[in-house]
Amino acid sequence: MTQALLKEKLHAGFMVERLEDMNEEYFQALKQTLTIVGDTELLSVPPLLTVYDQAPTLNHKITALAIMQDEIGHAHIAYRLLKDLGENPDELVFERPAHRWKNPYAFDFDLANWVELGVFNALFDRAGYTLLGDAHQHTSYGPWKRALVKVDKEELFHLRNGEIIMKAAMEHPETRAEVQRAVDWMFLMALEFFGVEDNRKSRSAQLDYKLKGKTNDELRQKWLSTAVPFCESIGVKIPAHYDEQTERYVIDVPFPCKFDSENKKWLHDQPDTWDNVIARFKKRGPFNEQFVARIQKGKHELEELRKEVG
Image 1 (cartoon, helix red, strand yellow):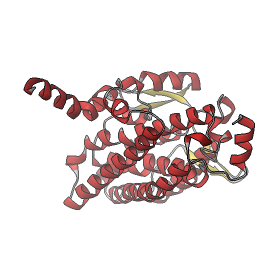
Image 2 (image 1 turned 90 degrees about the horizontal axis):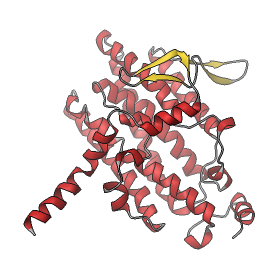
Image 3 (image 1 turned 30 degrees about the vertical axis):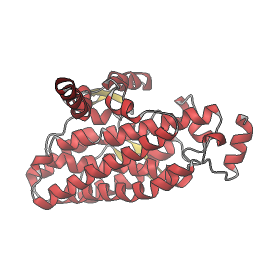
Image 4 (image 1 turned 180 degrees about the vertical axis):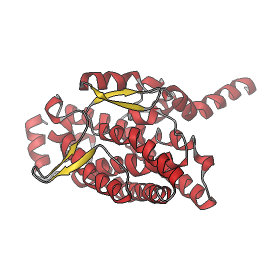
């Protein structure tokens, strides 16, 4: 099927169900999208595990476990769909070197305390909810659209859990300071989830083939429209505000700007370029190798054991 004909059919409401419904460009864009989704879901778990044992109550611990189980399930959905497209999920998960994973840069960092887990849920899962909610509404790939019914509801649960933790922490001076420190490094990191500015984006296959409905900047505005009011409502300082004149949310610091990964600190006085940001993403964060190794550890240990026994 030609590109023009398939795009025309998709924008008229046609849903892709089989390999035979795709052309090569659609096929490659879908595989890339699902790989990013699967990697993002799975690699969100190791950072949460770094502070899991700091849960203040058994109920908090059970909730955190449920969220991690959800994320693994979401990853399984993406990898299962990739299997239908000819990929080998075992090789994707257990054989790829760490630097080739396509999870957000934000997930290459450990968390400092339980409050950071809450901010992680409230900001990063909000980004996931924004991105996957858009996909659920607009995607032209039928199997993914149906699977996202479950994912969408669970991502909402995750971000609400983060809001509950943040609200509770803001009631005490010591934990209030922890919330602010976490937001200081995570807020702009969440904005980076949505990718380069629209005027810098060179590829448009996801939009052309209706794998998503909104542009990067539109999705960023969508995220800001709920993240900013929430943070303001509980007294957290953030580098963004709503501009009445333009009817848009405005980022109050250079975006992008340089990031000190060692100290988890944005250098607001040092504007950066998207080319440098992409280079930072490709270089990966400090815990990238450790977190991927944690995912792959059990499989590799089992293989070694089988060699010893057999």
